[in-house]
Amino acid sequence: MDTELQKHYALLLGVGSPWEVKTVDLNLPDKKVEIVLSWQWGQSAKCPECGRACSLHDSAPERTWRHLDTMQFTTLIRASTPRSNCPEHGVKTMLVPWAEPHSRFTLLFERFAVEVLLASASVSQACTLLDIGWETAHTIMSRAVARGLERRQLTALKHLGMDEKSFGRGQSYVTLLTDLAEARVLDVVADRTTAASEQLWATLTPAQKQGVAAVAVDMWEPFIQTIRKEVPQADIVHDKYHVSSYLGEAVDKVRRQEHKELLAEGDATLTGSRQLWLYNPENFTAEQRQEFAALKDLHLKVARAWAAKELFTKFWDYQEEGWARRFFKDWFGWVSRSRLKPMITVAQMLKRHLENILTYLKHHITNAVTEGLNSKIQNLKAAARGFRNFQNYRIRILFFCGKLELYPL
Ligand SMILES: [Zn+2]
Image (cartoon, rainbow, N blue to C red; front, side, top):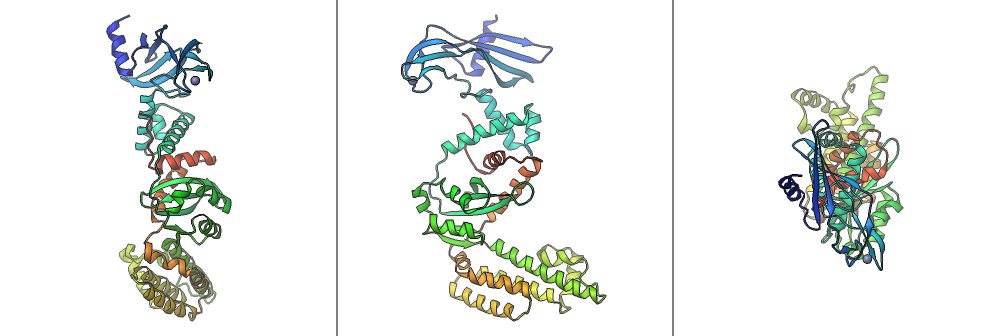
């Protein structure tokens, strides 16, 4: 055996005494390099549980680890790991310097795989690049997330977000707890019930919970209840994006009803106008702008509903609570007299929750961060078609949106 080559590989792998490179087999037809490492017997053993020096028991059966490719040759490491015999922990397979316990990959391979996964457009693309399967990618991501959660320091969690997302088909949901300042997902649980929400709060220590000043959240009762119970000092801030989407839905209801009435009279004015009433006029094309300007002046009910929704956006600009209250009172009065039932229903709901909408002026937080992460999370879901398993979904969200320290080195 060429000792220079052995030294070269020992250096590349970062292994030293008591491990040594025994052989390097180059398999040209299979484009494979196999490196056999061996333990120099006579060295004292170390218990992997407590680290104390103890006697050697025997060696475990030979195992294989995948390493980074060498010049596009699949590179494998083979070794029989010695087993220690600790007076306290008994017979245990010792730790090896090139891999984490139970991993089938070397540390360098795992590090590289994490980098490729983070940089790839999709998990399947990363699988192709790394020449690994889905299961393997999932194992590497789970291990990375476990490392990241272990290392994570959660200090100064002041502004949090709690938000639900649909998951899979039908009425299943997951709930996310988000650190708004750092734009990171703290954890994900299945469902959007009181129990699910409590499970999320349980991931924080009492001290962390006491530091929370405000939580941005939808007007979803189970979330509101648990926030009051778990972080009673925190302000609840109902999200302006959710408020706007409630108003948008109401505008759409008014349009559908009016469209039906007009069609009954043979009037097709509102045909094909759905998007015009929902989209932000700032994003209209020239053609849409013209079309919309003509519609707006027709004294339609939907035009009044739309105007009420547009007017409400002013609420968020107030600096002072007193002014915002006065504005709301006027707006509410105007909507109440509008005879537009869907708008009145939403206005009454906003009135019931007004105290927790006004808190926005104090904290200026929204779940927009979560909304930004949403498209990322949406991609994870789309890329993982037929991917139903919640645990896998959680791992992916934390891997890509948790801002965790994922690397093994
Ligand atoms: Zn021990």
